[in-house]
Length: 411
Image (cartoon, rainbow, N blue to C red; front, side, top):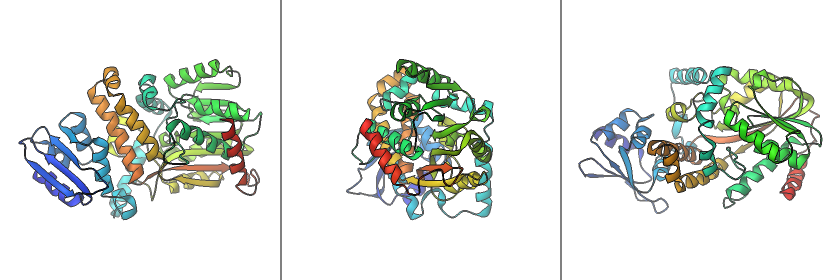
């Protein structure tokens, strides 16, 4: 315990964490906080504490998944939130602390190597996360199965409303016109494509690398009676041909890979008509480039990387794409994941029956960690609107507000 004890005494200043070791002794860290419930953790064997301290990137996650670390009071979300709150990004905590030039170069090379996603590898990486069965996603996502950051006009808005508001917010930025041809890169289960067709009378092609998502998206289009106007294909964006009036990509850019950013935007420019508009919605990181945490890279999104805004813009400007509008959604994803986490916990028995207890613990660790990263860490969401021609959009942003109001009235 001595190594863990040394780490915890240094790291925890806000809130209280208590550890009950394998011999039954209690170790208290931090100070009570009236705004934060204390967390009590039990280590089931004598080696857990030092294992976590010696393996800071994966130790706690694997100890939790393996049942070596048990929450006696509170939950895993409260534990991770407590730890992350003691190193808030705005106060100099987390990955943006002082780094040596060697470490910065090493992290940059690591991010680029890990996210070097060739076409075959991209499909395999997508299958790892999205082809594990639709039943899991039905349990914790909204009714439209939007697996990306929602848009909260108020923190107390319910998840279904916030996801509908997200779609309207994005559609307004696309400045759609009836009859236009729209490309949805990374279409998920088809919700965005079907929404755009319904509210804006446009034709949409959605592309995905997930065979499970493709089946669902096609079925939904057929059931809605719009399969002739909303189509879906299993194809990598790099293999696509044709021209589109509008392009939307929500929650897909995180899987592109840093070495492929310039090629991605070159392809976007090639697919977009001269006066076209593209809306990119992606998880991002505040501050400069970094690297994907070890837990996410190994267990959740192999090949994934959340880019810094500077990395996105540096790649897109080489293709003469104009960033006409940039919005940072600072806490919206934390609010979104809170709903996902609570719904997942409510369906623990069903998830453990579908998979097993270790998978369930892995999944809630993933959600709890992501929620804390968006609440206290350097993660955020970016919505970047791109155009090829400076005259492609109205002079002011007023059209976005007007369009959003009209779209929300349609429901």
